[in-house]
Every structure is written in C-alpha cells, then in structure tokens.
Length: 594
Ligand code: FAD
Image (cartoon, rainbow, N blue to C red; front, side, top):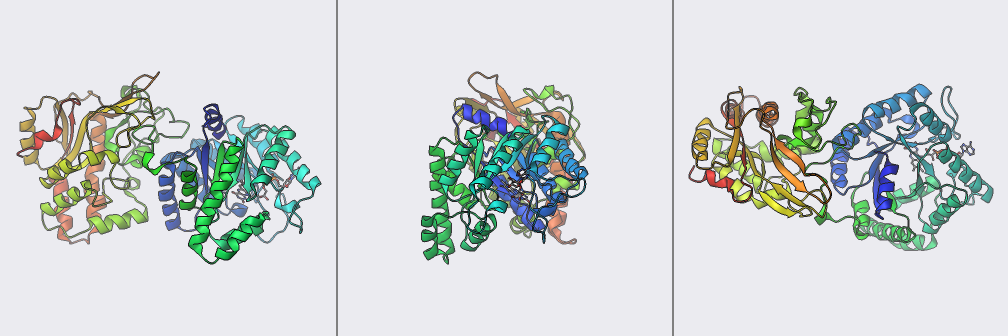
C-alpha cells in the first residue's frame, strides 16, 4: 500500500502515525541484528519503515535486499530511498523494477550527495541532475504504481546555507519553489531533514502551504543519542541549534547516559509541540537503534509495551500481491518466515476461507528455511546443544521451553513463547515430561474481548474464539495409548504421521478445521488459522527435518546426543490434535494416566 494512503486513512480517523528510518549496516552480523531489532520495533505498528541508499550508491544491492526482506519477511510497509548519484537510468530502472517485482510500492526519490571526494553534484551521462528528474521519470515510466516521497529542508538545502549558518531568504525561497516542483511532478509526500528548532519546522510547513504545497510534510526527528555523533550530524547538515539545547548539552556532554536521557526528553518535547500544531505524522531517524525512538513514542503515549495489538494472530503481509491474505494453516504459527518463503510463488493467497486458495502447492523445502540469524544460532547452541544421555533429557528441554525458561526452540523463529502459552504452560510442561514433545499449541478461548493482551487480535470492539490445539512428537507406543483414550473424547480430531509418511487420522483428507476465528462489528467472521490435512503433510517434512538439520546439526559428528536425536526423528510420530469443544472441552484430560 502507498504510504500516502495509510497517512490519509489515519488522518480521516484523527490518528497519529509514526515511522522509523534505518540504514544498511556494514557487516553481516549488523544486518542480522538490524532485522531482529526491526522485527521487535515493527510490533508497535509503524505506518512504514524506510531504508537508506548508501551515499553514492555504495549499498545498492544491500539496500535492495534489505528493502525486499523488510516488506516480505518483516512484513512492514517499506519505503526505499533511491538517489541519482552514479546511477544511469538503466540502474535506476533496475532498482525500481526489482522492488516492484517484490511488491514494494514506496520510494523516497533523492538526488543524492556528490560522490566521495567531489564538492558538487555532477550529473553522470545517462543519469539525472536532481530529484525532480527522478520523480518525473518515475511517474512517466511507472505511472501511478509508486508512492513517491521527496526530501524537504526546513532550513534550506545545506548547499545554500552559507558560512553564517543561515540560507539567504532568496535561496530559501528558491528551495521551496523547487520543492513545489517536485510535488507538482508527482511526489505525494515530503519527509524533512532533521532539525532541532521546532519553530523552524513549523514555519517551513507554513511557508510550504503559502506557496500551494498541500501534501503531508512529515517531520524527521533524530533523537540525540551521543554528543559526538550529534555534533558530527549537525555539522554535516548545517542544522541550527537552539541556545537552550546547547546550554543543556554542554555540561553533560561526557556522560553518555545523561545525553541519551536528555535526547529522549528533548525529542519528546519537540514531538509534543509538533503534534500540538495539528501535525499527525512523526518520522524517527533511528540510526538503527531502538531505545530512544521507542522511549519517545512511549512518552507520547503512542505505543505501549503492554498493549501490543495484533491485526491477526500472525503478522499481516504488506506486499501488495498478498496484502489481502487472511487465512493460514496453524502449523507454521511459530515459523512465519518459513511460511512466507514456502508460499512466495503463489499467485493467489487465501482470503476469507482456506478453500478459496486456488494454489495449494508449497515451495520445496530448501536450506533457507533452516537458516537463522547468528544471534539466534548462538542462543540455540547455548540452550539446546547440551549433552543428551537419554530421552528424558530431551523431554526436559521441551518442558523448560514451555515454562519460558529457555528462550529459543529449534522449531520456532520467534523469541520465546506467545503470550497465550502462559495460560497452559504448566499442563504443557506436564505432558512434555511424559514424552509428548510439543512444538505448537493454543488454549481454548470462548469469546474473549479482541483487545485481550494474551489472546486478542483484530483491534478493539470484537470477540475472539479458538479451539484448543496441540502439536507434538511422540513415540508410536505413546500414540497408540493416546488414540486409545481419544475414544472417550469424541470432540478430539487428530492427524498423525511419521517421517516416512505412515499416517493415521480421524478426519477426511479434505476436512479443513477453522481453529481461530473472530467476530467484529460490521464484518464477516474472520477465521485466520486453520488445520488442513493437505498442508500438514507438507509441514511434516519441515518439522521432522528440524530434528537433524537444526538440533542434531549442533553436535560433533560422532556425538551420542546426535544419534539419539536421529533415532527420534526416524521413529516418532508428529501429531496435530484439536479439541473441537471450545466451550467445555479439556484437551489435557486425554493425557491423564498416560
Ligand atoms: P534535490 O531535491 O534535487 O535538491 C538538491 C538541491 O538542489 C536543493 O537545494 C534544490 O533546491 C536544488 N535544486 C536542484 N535542482 C534545482 C532546480 N532545478 N531548481 C532550483 N533548485 C534546484 N542521501 C543519500 O545518499 N542516501 C539516502 O538514503 C538519503 N536519504 C535522505 C533522506 C532525507 C529525508 C533527506 C532530507 C536527505 C537524504 N539524503 C540521502 C541526502 C540527500 O541525498 C542530499 O541532501 C542531497 O544533497 C540532495 O538530495 P535531494 O533529493 O534533496 O535533492
């Protein structure tokens, strides 16, 4: 979706929106960490996140790759910066075609700074002279597909700010007139250069309105994080600093903590003043750090750690080709990125009902599904690569995870447990210690408010429901014993399969079971999670592979722990169990005396 449309929607509801800017890190570890951080920040529902284009095009491939992952794996509306420096039109088009193919719709169109070592921007052969050219090109070649944002400079562009630190009135006005040209050529949004004097920004907005610029002008806020970085940045951008800011910073400049705290307070006050003037968008330059940006938003009451709301039980995609998707099999609940990659080739995504999906063919399992960021690998190694003398040691790992004592699981891409797991974690511990090794679960819910912090989704005003669900590995004997008991629990339906594909079930292959649904004002029933026997067959390969590709893989070749895990992989069953009686059922009762 175009950012401008999101902003217009929010304006109509009188809602304040915020966004985060990131830049491409220099190392692979840095990139991993950035995605982890972004993933956490995106839970707070920014209207978009943007990723910069390295000076002179130095990060072109990385920026393209990060933008793609932001839109399609992190599932946040992504705006990619694109500059004209060293970019003949073919390269510009390559970048635009790539992001278009990846379902990204938003670009911050920039001229860029002169390449390193040059004072003045020089148009290269076959390239563009300024952002205006780029905007015109984008509209000419790509029509209405892209939402186009351009840069605005409340203090005028640094090139026209002279040694006195201020642009002449003439230069300022010429800059404004040029900004209007960019908007008239098709830009639909302006994001500003950083500033620390809020009055300058407010005057700039007013001046823009006077000359007929009507699109939203989003203030770029850079929280002061450390003194040296701040001085470098304001020097580079020639930013004016209010006297009270200098006076407050000077005495604490060597105390990093104090500077950070001051930066949060100062940023909060700037934003308060901006919001008080009726501006409803804030853009935070995060410098790839989360704390200051989140603290400012928290101070403003725009986010609340305790009230992270989920539009669906899983994060809704933003890619324009799958934005309507609202039904998924429950099996990948803890592995959303794997699900996204395995279904990336679908030309239709289930909407409303699972059976609407005309394309049930999942992409093949590749090594990609088992790759994890380094930081997560380290955590798994610490928590799971322990000596395993017997199956009881394995039971213990699973039980510890369900109690929240381990933060990682080979079967999960998420950090720790979902909040709803706390409702049943002691029962989960109990069955795990008996050898029913759970990798997915949900408690029964019968009409809880949709803004419940533990089980809610879909925003306030509705009610949510779910059937109790368990998914686990167990031995053949345990499965036989459990199925024997299931006869006394007619509300249970199950699917069971081993690695080779031997299977049992008490449902038909085409029986799709909605296990989560919600009722909202003026909407049809939404049923975002289902159990589908056909998808279970696909999922089981991934679930079994994790025993060896992720867990056993962490041990040396001849380690006995490794062979124990391999034995389990080849002999156990994977079981998906639903209690269809979400009102009176007790799924765990079936495990008593086993
Ligand atoms: P333009 O809009 O083309 O303007 C540049 C200057 O030239 C202005 O003073 C303008 O008034 C003047 N000008 C140009 N053409 C005309 C004309 N025909 N008539 C009159 N005046 C004219 N840099 C990066 O390398 N990567 C990034 O990701 C990046 N992100 C940024 C994000 C924001 C929000 C901002 C504010 C800046 C960003 N920059 C980035 C820096 C930016 O590339 C530089 O400031 C660059 O020098 C100008 O880019 P621009 O798009 O503003 O240029």
